[in-house]
Image (cartoon, rainbow over all chains, first blue to last red; front, top):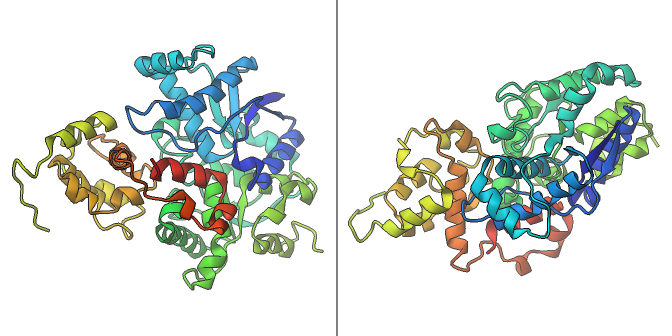
Length: 294
Length: 135
Protein backbone atom coordinates (compact mmCIF):
# COMPACT_ATOMS: atom_id res chain seq x y z
CA UNK A 1 0.00 0.00 0.00
CA UNK A 2 1.18 3.51 -0.85
CA UNK A 3 -0.08 6.76 0.57
CA UNK A 4 0.73 10.42 -0.06
CA UNK A 5 2.51 12.00 2.85
CA UNK A 6 3.09 15.66 3.78
CA UNK A 7 6.24 16.17 5.88
CA UNK A 8 6.34 19.93 6.67
CA UNK A 9 9.36 22.09 7.51
CA UNK A 10 10.39 20.81 10.92
CA UNK A 11 10.49 17.15 9.92
CA UNK A 12 13.19 17.94 7.38
CA UNK A 13 15.43 19.62 9.97
CA UNK A 14 14.96 19.47 13.74
CA UNK A 15 12.55 16.53 13.80
CA UNK A 16 14.30 14.04 11.50
CA UNK A 17 13.75 11.54 14.30
CA UNK A 18 10.00 11.85 13.77
CA UNK A 19 10.15 11.52 10.00
CA UNK A 20 12.78 8.77 9.70
CA UNK A 21 11.21 6.58 12.38
CA UNK A 22 7.77 7.00 10.78
CA UNK A 23 8.87 6.15 7.25
CA UNK A 24 10.82 3.08 8.40
CA UNK A 25 8.01 1.89 10.70
CA UNK A 26 5.36 2.27 8.04
CA UNK A 27 7.54 0.37 5.56
CA UNK A 28 7.77 -2.45 8.10
CA UNK A 29 3.96 -2.39 8.29
CA UNK A 30 3.76 -2.63 4.50
CA UNK A 31 2.93 1.02 3.79
CA UNK A 32 5.07 3.27 1.61
CA UNK A 33 4.83 6.93 2.59
CA UNK A 34 5.25 8.80 -0.68
CA UNK A 35 6.39 12.36 -0.10
CA UNK A 36 4.13 14.97 -1.69
CA UNK A 37 5.92 16.59 -4.65
CA UNK A 38 6.49 20.38 -4.49
CA UNK A 39 5.04 20.76 -0.99
CA UNK A 40 5.37 24.10 0.77
CA UNK A 41 5.17 25.23 4.41
CA UNK A 42 1.56 24.99 5.63
CA UNK A 43 1.94 28.11 7.78
CA UNK A 44 1.94 26.13 11.05
CA UNK A 45 -1.18 27.86 12.44
CA UNK A 46 -4.68 28.20 11.02
CA UNK A 47 -5.69 31.78 10.30
CA UNK A 48 -8.46 32.74 12.74
CA UNK A 49 -9.55 36.07 11.29
CA UNK A 50 -12.49 36.37 8.92
CA UNK A 51 -10.70 38.95 6.77
CA UNK A 52 -7.36 37.12 6.58
CA UNK A 53 -7.71 34.70 3.69
CA UNK A 54 -4.19 35.06 2.34
CA UNK A 55 -2.82 32.73 5.02
CA UNK A 56 -5.09 29.92 3.80
CA UNK A 57 -3.35 29.96 0.43
CA UNK A 58 -0.30 27.98 1.60
CA UNK A 59 -2.15 24.96 3.05
CA UNK A 60 -4.68 24.95 0.18
CA UNK A 61 -1.81 24.88 -2.33
CA UNK A 62 -0.51 21.76 -0.58
CA UNK A 63 -3.94 20.15 -0.83
CA UNK A 64 -4.04 20.96 -4.55
CA UNK A 65 -0.63 19.25 -4.90
CA UNK A 66 -2.24 16.16 -3.32
CA UNK A 67 -5.09 16.24 -5.86
CA UNK A 68 -2.53 16.47 -8.67
CA UNK A 69 -0.93 13.21 -7.56
CA UNK A 70 -4.29 11.51 -8.18
CA UNK A 71 -4.59 10.72 -4.48
CA UNK A 72 -7.58 11.68 -2.36
CA UNK A 73 -5.78 11.23 0.92
CA UNK A 74 -2.76 12.82 2.62
CA UNK A 75 -1.08 11.65 5.82
CA UNK A 76 0.68 14.07 8.16
CA UNK A 77 3.00 13.48 11.09
CA UNK A 78 3.42 16.88 12.72
CA UNK A 79 0.37 17.79 14.81
CA UNK A 80 0.47 21.45 13.79
CA UNK A 81 0.63 20.59 10.08
CA UNK A 82 -2.28 18.20 10.61
CA UNK A 83 -4.39 20.91 12.24
CA UNK A 84 -3.56 23.56 9.64
CA UNK A 85 -4.16 21.31 6.61
CA UNK A 86 -7.31 19.71 8.04
CA UNK A 87 -8.90 23.07 8.88
CA UNK A 88 -7.98 24.66 5.54
CA UNK A 89 -9.55 21.60 3.93
CA UNK A 90 -12.79 22.00 5.90
CA UNK A 91 -12.92 25.70 5.09
CA UNK A 92 -12.65 24.96 1.37
CA UNK A 93 -15.29 22.27 1.67
CA UNK A 94 -17.83 24.22 3.72
CA UNK A 95 -17.44 27.97 3.14
CA UNK A 96 -18.58 28.73 -0.38
CA UNK A 97 -17.78 32.45 -0.31
CA UNK A 98 -14.23 32.03 0.99
CA UNK A 99 -13.66 29.07 -1.35
CA UNK A 100 -14.54 31.24 -4.35
CA UNK A 101 -12.23 34.06 -3.23
CA UNK A 102 -9.28 31.73 -2.53
CA UNK A 103 -9.75 29.78 -5.78
CA UNK A 104 -9.97 32.95 -7.86
CA UNK A 105 -6.89 34.36 -6.12
CA UNK A 106 -4.98 31.20 -7.14
CA UNK A 107 -6.13 31.36 -10.75
CA UNK A 108 -3.01 29.50 -11.90
CA UNK A 109 -4.11 26.45 -9.90
CA UNK A 110 -7.01 24.06 -10.41
CA UNK A 111 -10.09 24.90 -8.32
CA UNK A 112 -10.18 23.14 -4.98
CA UNK A 113 -13.33 22.14 -3.10
CA UNK A 114 -11.99 20.11 -0.17
CA UNK A 115 -11.83 16.81 -2.05
CA UNK A 116 -8.87 15.47 -0.08
CA UNK A 117 -9.03 13.64 3.24
CA UNK A 118 -6.39 14.89 5.69
CA UNK A 119 -5.24 12.21 8.15
CA UNK A 120 -2.79 12.14 11.00
CA UNK A 121 -0.60 9.04 11.12
CA UNK A 122 -2.17 7.98 14.44
CA UNK A 123 -5.60 7.97 12.83
CA UNK A 124 -4.15 6.19 9.79
CA UNK A 125 -2.71 3.45 12.03
CA UNK A 126 -6.06 2.98 13.78
CA UNK A 127 -8.37 3.16 10.73
CA UNK A 128 -6.34 1.97 7.73
CA UNK A 129 -3.95 -0.53 9.29
CA UNK A 130 -5.60 -1.55 12.57
CA UNK A 131 -4.10 -2.43 15.93
CA UNK A 132 -4.31 -6.18 15.24
CA UNK A 133 -2.01 -5.81 12.23
CA UNK A 134 0.37 -3.67 14.31
CA UNK A 135 0.37 -6.33 17.04
CA UNK A 136 1.19 -9.06 14.51
CA UNK A 137 4.31 -7.20 13.44
CA UNK A 138 5.65 -6.42 16.91
CA UNK A 139 9.04 -8.02 17.52
CA UNK A 140 10.09 -6.24 20.72
CA UNK A 141 7.27 -5.77 23.18
CA UNK A 142 7.61 -2.70 25.37
CA UNK A 143 6.57 -5.01 28.16
CA UNK A 144 5.27 -3.11 31.09
CA UNK A 145 6.82 0.23 30.12
CA UNK A 146 4.68 2.89 31.78
CA UNK A 147 4.11 5.68 29.26
CA UNK A 148 2.16 8.94 29.60
CA UNK A 149 0.20 9.59 26.39
CA UNK A 150 0.43 13.32 25.56
CA UNK A 151 -1.89 14.66 22.86
CA UNK A 152 -1.38 18.39 23.22
CA UNK A 153 -3.86 20.73 21.56
CA UNK A 154 -3.84 20.45 17.82
CA UNK A 155 -4.73 16.76 17.45
CA UNK A 156 -7.89 17.28 19.52
CA UNK A 157 -9.02 20.87 19.12
CA UNK A 158 -11.11 22.35 17.68
CA UNK A 159 -13.66 19.52 17.67
CA UNK A 160 -14.18 19.46 13.90
CA UNK A 161 -10.62 18.21 13.33
CA UNK A 162 -10.20 16.07 16.46
CA UNK A 163 -8.62 12.69 15.64
CA UNK A 164 -10.98 11.02 18.11
CA UNK A 165 -14.27 11.86 19.84
CA UNK A 166 -13.74 14.69 22.36
CA UNK A 167 -12.84 13.46 25.82
CA UNK A 168 -12.21 9.84 24.89
CA UNK A 169 -8.37 9.82 25.04
CA UNK A 170 -8.42 6.31 23.56
CA UNK A 171 -6.19 6.52 20.51
CA UNK A 172 -2.77 6.82 22.15
CA UNK A 173 -3.83 4.31 24.81
CA UNK A 174 -4.69 1.76 22.09
CA UNK A 175 -1.43 2.53 20.31
CA UNK A 176 0.66 2.02 23.45
CA UNK A 177 -1.18 -1.19 24.37
CA UNK A 178 -0.55 -2.57 20.87
CA UNK A 179 3.16 -2.04 21.53
CA UNK A 180 2.93 -3.85 24.87
CA UNK A 181 3.36 -0.69 26.93
CA UNK A 182 1.08 0.41 29.75
CA UNK A 183 -0.62 3.77 29.09
CA UNK A 184 -0.66 5.88 32.23
CA UNK A 185 -3.55 8.35 32.25
CA UNK A 186 -2.52 11.75 33.54
CA UNK A 187 -4.36 15.00 34.07
CA UNK A 188 -2.43 17.08 31.53
CA UNK A 189 -2.74 14.84 28.44
CA UNK A 190 -4.32 17.63 26.41
CA UNK A 191 -3.05 20.67 28.29
CA UNK A 192 -1.23 23.21 26.13
CA UNK A 193 2.60 23.13 26.39
CA UNK A 194 2.78 26.87 25.67
CA UNK A 195 3.29 26.32 21.95
CA UNK A 196 4.75 29.31 20.07
CA UNK A 197 4.80 31.36 23.26
CA UNK A 198 8.26 29.85 23.74
CA UNK A 199 9.22 32.61 21.30
CA UNK A 200 7.22 35.57 22.64
CA UNK A 201 6.72 34.70 26.32
CA UNK A 202 9.20 31.92 27.15
CA UNK A 203 8.48 32.13 30.89
CA UNK A 204 4.78 31.49 30.28
CA UNK A 205 5.49 28.56 27.96
CA UNK A 206 8.00 26.99 30.33
CA UNK A 207 5.61 27.26 33.25
CA UNK A 208 2.93 25.51 31.19
CA UNK A 209 5.44 22.78 30.19
CA UNK A 210 6.57 22.29 33.78
CA UNK A 211 2.97 21.71 34.88
CA UNK A 212 2.53 18.99 32.25
CA UNK A 213 5.81 17.25 33.09
CA UNK A 214 5.08 17.31 36.82
CA UNK A 215 1.62 15.84 36.20
CA UNK A 216 3.22 13.03 34.18
CA UNK A 217 5.80 12.42 36.93
CA UNK A 218 3.07 12.29 39.58
CA UNK A 219 1.15 9.72 37.54
CA UNK A 220 4.05 7.28 37.82
CA UNK A 221 4.89 7.29 34.12
CA UNK A 222 8.47 6.46 33.14
CA UNK A 223 8.32 8.20 29.77
CA UNK A 224 6.07 10.42 27.69
CA UNK A 225 4.98 9.91 24.10
CA UNK A 226 3.94 12.76 21.78
CA UNK A 227 3.62 13.67 18.11
CA UNK A 228 4.35 17.40 17.78
CA UNK A 229 7.87 18.79 17.28
CA UNK A 230 6.97 21.99 19.13
CA UNK A 231 5.62 20.04 22.11
CA UNK A 232 8.80 17.95 21.98
CA UNK A 233 10.88 21.12 22.13
CA UNK A 234 8.96 22.64 25.06
CA UNK A 235 8.53 19.38 26.99
CA UNK A 236 11.68 17.51 25.97
CA UNK A 237 14.55 19.74 24.93
CA UNK A 238 13.71 22.44 27.48
CA UNK A 239 13.98 20.03 30.43
CA UNK A 240 17.66 20.91 30.87
CA UNK A 241 16.76 24.56 31.43
CA UNK A 242 13.91 23.65 33.78
CA UNK A 243 16.11 21.33 35.84
CA UNK A 244 18.92 23.90 36.04
CA UNK A 245 16.45 26.51 37.26
CA UNK A 246 15.06 24.08 39.82
CA UNK A 247 11.60 24.40 38.30
CA UNK A 248 11.30 20.69 37.49
CA UNK A 249 11.67 17.95 40.09
CA UNK A 250 12.93 15.12 37.85
CA UNK A 251 13.51 14.13 34.23
CA UNK A 252 10.79 12.68 32.05
CA UNK A 253 12.14 11.00 28.90
CA UNK A 254 10.11 12.08 25.84
CA UNK A 255 9.70 10.24 22.54
CA UNK A 256 7.78 10.61 19.33
CA UNK A 257 5.18 7.86 19.05
CA UNK A 258 6.89 6.69 15.86
CA UNK A 259 10.16 6.15 17.71
CA UNK A 260 8.52 3.72 20.13
CA UNK A 261 6.82 2.06 17.16
CA UNK A 262 10.20 1.63 15.40
CA UNK A 263 11.68 -0.01 18.50
CA UNK A 264 8.72 -2.36 18.83
CA UNK A 265 8.92 -3.36 15.18
CA UNK A 266 12.51 -4.41 15.83
CA UNK A 267 14.02 -1.84 13.47
CA UNK A 268 17.68 -0.84 13.71
CA UNK A 269 18.18 1.86 16.41
CA UNK A 270 19.58 4.23 13.74
CA UNK A 271 16.12 4.50 12.18
CA UNK A 272 14.84 6.10 15.38
CA UNK A 273 17.46 8.89 15.17
CA UNK A 274 17.53 8.94 18.97
CA UNK A 275 20.60 11.19 18.91
CA UNK A 276 18.17 14.04 18.17
CA UNK A 277 16.34 13.44 21.47
CA UNK A 278 17.68 14.60 24.79
CA UNK A 279 20.67 12.35 25.75
CA UNK A 280 18.85 11.29 28.92
CA UNK A 281 15.99 9.89 26.82
CA UNK A 282 18.41 7.58 24.99
CA UNK A 283 20.01 6.58 28.28
CA UNK A 284 16.57 5.61 29.53
CA UNK A 285 16.06 3.28 26.54
CA UNK A 286 19.47 1.71 27.19
CA UNK A 287 18.68 1.04 30.84
CA UNK A 288 15.46 -0.62 29.72
CA UNK A 289 17.40 -2.76 27.26
CA UNK A 290 15.39 -1.36 24.33
CA UNK A 291 18.42 0.17 22.61
CA UNK A 292 21.84 -1.48 22.74
CA UNK A 293 24.37 0.22 25.03
CA UNK A 294 27.63 1.49 23.64
CA UNK B 1 -10.55 47.83 38.90
CA UNK B 2 -12.82 50.80 38.30
CA UNK B 3 -13.79 51.60 34.75
CA UNK B 4 -15.81 54.70 34.00
CA UNK B 5 -18.15 54.17 31.10
CA UNK B 6 -19.37 56.99 28.92
CA UNK B 7 -19.99 57.57 25.24
CA UNK B 8 -16.39 58.77 25.07
CA UNK B 9 -14.86 55.65 26.62
CA UNK B 10 -16.93 53.12 24.72
CA UNK B 11 -15.36 52.81 21.28
CA UNK B 12 -18.15 51.57 19.07
CA UNK B 13 -15.93 51.42 15.98
CA UNK B 14 -13.66 49.07 17.88
CA UNK B 15 -16.56 46.71 18.69
CA UNK B 16 -17.68 46.78 15.06
CA UNK B 17 -14.17 46.05 13.77
CA UNK B 18 -13.63 43.27 16.29
CA UNK B 19 -16.91 41.59 15.37
CA UNK B 20 -16.05 41.81 11.68
CA UNK B 21 -12.54 40.43 12.05
CA UNK B 22 -13.40 37.68 14.54
CA UNK B 23 -16.79 36.75 13.09
CA UNK B 24 -17.97 36.26 16.68
CA UNK B 25 -20.97 37.73 18.49
CA UNK B 26 -19.19 38.89 21.63
CA UNK B 27 -22.48 40.05 23.19
CA UNK B 28 -23.63 36.48 23.78
CA UNK B 29 -20.93 36.11 26.47
CA UNK B 30 -22.67 35.73 29.85
CA UNK B 31 -19.48 35.93 31.93
CA UNK B 32 -19.57 32.34 33.21
CA UNK B 33 -15.77 32.08 33.28
CA UNK B 34 -15.43 28.66 31.58
CA UNK B 35 -12.77 30.24 29.33
CA UNK B 36 -10.71 31.36 32.30
CA UNK B 37 -11.13 28.02 34.05
CA UNK B 38 -9.73 26.15 31.05
CA UNK B 39 -6.99 28.62 30.06
CA UNK B 40 -3.48 27.14 30.52
CA UNK B 41 -1.99 30.62 30.82
CA UNK B 42 -4.08 31.93 33.76
CA UNK B 43 -1.04 32.12 36.05
CA UNK B 44 0.81 34.21 33.50
CA UNK B 45 -1.85 36.68 32.43
CA UNK B 46 -2.83 39.90 34.13
CA UNK B 47 -6.47 39.86 33.01
CA UNK B 48 -8.44 36.64 32.56
CA UNK B 49 -10.15 35.85 29.24
CA UNK B 50 -13.49 36.41 30.99
CA UNK B 51 -12.47 39.95 31.96
CA UNK B 52 -11.15 40.66 28.48
CA UNK B 53 -14.49 39.49 27.03
CA UNK B 54 -16.33 41.93 29.33
CA UNK B 55 -14.03 44.78 28.33
CA UNK B 56 -14.56 43.85 24.68
CA UNK B 57 -18.33 44.08 25.19
CA UNK B 58 -17.85 47.62 26.49
CA UNK B 59 -15.44 48.45 23.66
CA UNK B 60 -12.65 49.42 26.04
CA UNK B 61 -9.90 49.21 23.44
CA UNK B 62 -7.26 51.22 25.27
CA UNK B 63 -7.89 49.40 28.55
CA UNK B 64 -7.53 46.00 26.84
CA UNK B 65 -4.21 47.14 25.35
CA UNK B 66 -2.83 47.64 28.86
CA UNK B 67 -3.01 43.88 29.40
CA UNK B 68 -0.90 41.15 27.82
CA UNK B 69 -3.67 38.54 27.78
CA UNK B 70 -4.12 38.29 24.01
CA UNK B 71 -0.35 38.32 23.46
CA UNK B 72 0.04 35.44 25.94
CA UNK B 73 -2.72 33.35 24.31
CA UNK B 74 -1.24 30.21 22.74
CA UNK B 75 -4.32 29.42 20.58
CA UNK B 76 -4.87 26.10 22.37
CA UNK B 77 -8.67 26.40 21.79
CA UNK B 78 -9.59 25.25 25.30
CA UNK B 79 -11.70 28.37 25.78
CA UNK B 80 -13.34 27.94 22.39
CA UNK B 81 -14.35 24.31 22.93
CA UNK B 82 -15.56 24.98 26.48
CA UNK B 83 -17.63 28.13 25.87
CA UNK B 84 -21.29 27.22 26.56
CA UNK B 85 -22.38 30.15 24.36
CA UNK B 86 -20.42 28.87 21.38
CA UNK B 87 -18.11 31.86 21.14
CA UNK B 88 -14.80 31.00 19.50
CA UNK B 89 -12.78 33.00 22.00
CA UNK B 90 -9.47 32.07 20.33
CA UNK B 91 -10.76 34.04 17.34
CA UNK B 92 -11.50 37.03 19.56
CA UNK B 93 -7.93 36.89 20.93
CA UNK B 94 -6.53 36.56 17.41
CA UNK B 95 -8.56 39.58 16.32
CA UNK B 96 -7.24 41.65 19.21
CA UNK B 97 -3.69 40.70 18.20
CA UNK B 98 -4.39 41.56 14.58
CA UNK B 99 -5.98 44.94 15.39
CA UNK B 100 -2.79 45.82 17.29
CA UNK B 101 -0.44 44.42 14.64
CA UNK B 102 -2.29 46.34 11.95
CA UNK B 103 -1.13 49.53 13.64
CA UNK B 104 2.25 48.42 12.29
CA UNK B 105 3.55 47.33 15.68
CA UNK B 106 5.34 44.08 16.44
CA UNK B 107 5.20 42.21 19.74
CA UNK B 108 8.34 40.26 18.87
CA UNK B 109 11.18 42.04 17.09
CA UNK B 110 12.74 39.41 14.86
CA UNK B 111 16.15 41.07 14.50
CA UNK B 112 16.49 41.25 18.29
CA UNK B 113 16.02 37.52 18.87
CA UNK B 114 19.22 35.87 20.16
CA UNK B 115 21.03 33.78 17.54
CA UNK B 116 20.89 30.73 19.86
CA UNK B 117 17.09 31.02 20.12
CA UNK B 118 16.67 31.02 16.36
CA UNK B 119 19.10 28.12 15.95
CA UNK B 120 17.60 25.84 18.58
CA UNK B 121 13.89 26.35 17.89
CA UNK B 122 11.93 24.04 15.63
CA UNK B 123 10.74 25.76 12.45
CA UNK B 124 7.08 25.55 13.46
CA UNK B 125 7.86 27.63 16.57
CA UNK B 126 9.37 30.39 14.45
CA UNK B 127 6.72 30.29 11.74
CA UNK B 128 3.78 30.25 14.18
CA UNK B 129 5.39 32.78 16.53
CA UNK B 130 6.07 35.23 13.72
CA UNK B 131 2.57 34.71 12.35
CA UNK B 132 1.00 35.54 15.72
CA UNK B 133 3.32 38.28 16.96
CA UNK B 134 4.62 40.27 14.01
CA UNK B 135 2.85 42.46 11.47
